Figure (cartoon, helix red, strand yellow):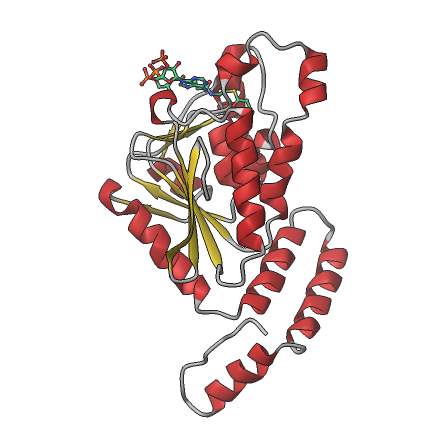
Length: 259
Ligand code: CAA
């Protein structure tokens, strides 16, 4: 796939696709076209049966330093309304396959929001997370006030959003924002390792389970439990469920096909 601001590989590793943000000079600032390219790549990977897990990454210096300030600087409220840029971002949330953000360096503003919209975050020790929009006299607009609060709780989210302070990978780990912290040279390898642990599972069960965990964030408990139960029953419609249980009984490794 040929894009200008990202590099996308559907077969980066067996069953693992990779999206690399590729505006290194601008610290991977997320301009409108880059976000459209991410949307297109995610839609393509979601339809590709060979892809079971997706990794989004940047480079050692920056995952992404936020939405492109230079592109937004002169916009009016009505311009922003018409552009409706966050509609593109909704695709990330709608992606059915699991997405892992592999983060090193700056992960700020829209960059932090992009990482938080992914399903899991693996970070290098050098990663810095923050929502510094307040310093530009704006505020997070791509889910930052909501997802950060749910991930780290009100106290830290409020402080980060109102002061723009950055937190280290270690602090992000302690606060529950991310899954793993590893030395810088290992963050992509670690994300691949995690992706492989998911890619060997049944794609059908993974899809239904991901949907169910996400449901916990936008429903009450009863509705969520009802949704979970339906998805649990749905697993029994798959050949993978028979294979998984058969393999257990026969004391062998399962081979899941996604059927
Ligand atoms: N948009 C556009 N360009 C950006 C950018 C951004 N978000 N972040 C960095 N850049 C550009 C810089 O302008 C600079 O370009 P030039 O070389 O042409 O001047 C280049 O990337 C390198 O950046 P710095 O020279 O500033 O590097 P630094 O190491 O001194 O500082 C930094 C790094 C602390 C991340 C600093 O660049 C910075 O504060 N960036 C902005 C962070 C920010 O405010 N993000 C929020 C954006 S708004 C948003 O995201 C809204 C939303 O909710 C969707």
